[in-house]
Image (cartoon, rainbow, N blue to C red; front, side):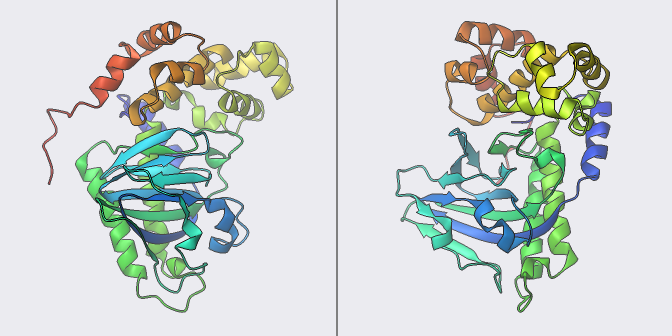
Length: 342
């Protein structure tokens, strides 16, 4: 879903904000699937067992080899290939599947209940193509992961910007697994050594940097806006219902402020009016759907608030310089500047 930002200032703002994230409670397991397979998962159902007191967890899957799809709570199916990272930022219910139809099996039927004395390995599927995933859980109370804000989609796939980043992520997770695999007797083995927490935290931060760098709002205080007493409730409404025909009056009422106060805060912190913010946010969401799903352009248009494909295409071309169908096709072409890797 991400393209690297061209602005060094935007990158530094993003780095500084993400460096302040508090992430904890890491735990790993490995999944070895063979096609056909379909796995039903509800991470929040075991959040407290993974990290006592937690109501939700952030979950990620690194596709170490093979390919799969993930369908989040919003029903959108995202495709992921080797080196990609699947992120479930709110621990939402989701399904992982292979290429072929299969009966959906709950993940808890394939795992012993936590705590795990050793790093679990989940094995499931038929006799077809193999897919290997490395999975991690983290806990954070940062507003970035507040499900009311819906900064992120229910599930999304990050294609890391260069091969070295992908290798770094995979190597870090493998190292963490090796470090914790022999630890027995701890209440939560993945917490037994500091490296087990720090490495998955770095994985997530690296992935979020790649994902959020595509946002046109990073440079103008967007992450700070999530903590603003006026902007936070307004953004929560817009993020939860981007397709709605919002008016400034409705947004101001939801934030319990006047129209003038709302407009002033948007312009001061985010550098744009509330309606312009909504338009930019819709383009941000649309770009992600175009990049990692097969959802039709028409369906994307409706999902982000446009009544016709023509109106959406015109708005997308104005914002991104090319029609959405052309943008999607170009995105999926291999980069001639990138050398092929084994």
